[in-house]
Length: 210
Figure 1 (spheres, rainbow, N blue to C red):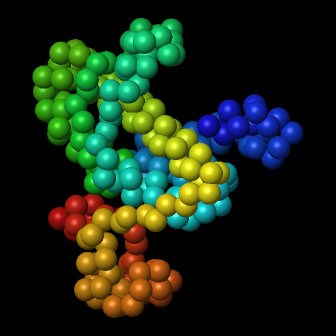
Figure 2 (tube, helix red, strand yellow):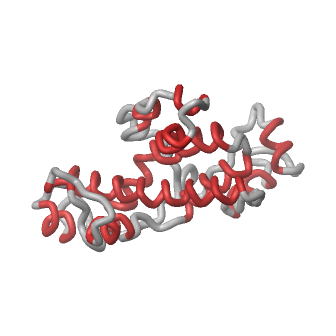
Figure 3 (cartoon, rainbow, N blue to C red):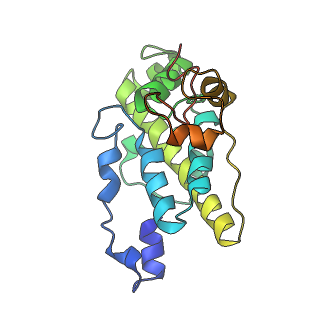
């Protein structure tokens, strides 16, 4: 997205941003399976373009609660919307979907593989000859497609004057007000006053506490 903005505004500061700057995020930061590279790079892009915390929060919360991947990338490719020279990397039709319930690569991808029937399941076996890594790459590529579409919507809405009110998972407020991760005060103040508590905005009940 930043590349397209830079092309449209070549004299702007966007053009000075290296195109591969956020490649480090792949595999959850250089394959550490930590913060997924899609919310990582997406949040950075939103900060650069909108400089608005609400927009970033809405994107992150949306990622947590949305079933991925949709079939949009496959349908767009099948309709000739884009091409790929490597036949082994062409998207598959109707991949299994799962809700990440976490921003962490390890957790998000693990839930998807479980929904797909596991490394020895029918989807991986039939579509990828048992290659779970290739199946995961197909899923993650489609996830990127879905998330870039959402980023475009958020940026366009922001430029039109619409600032979202992020809807965080209910478990977050429950955790903050229980005394587990903060006091009974307002959410933002609890974040600011988090020490020595561990306060955050990420879904609590299935990403941290299980």
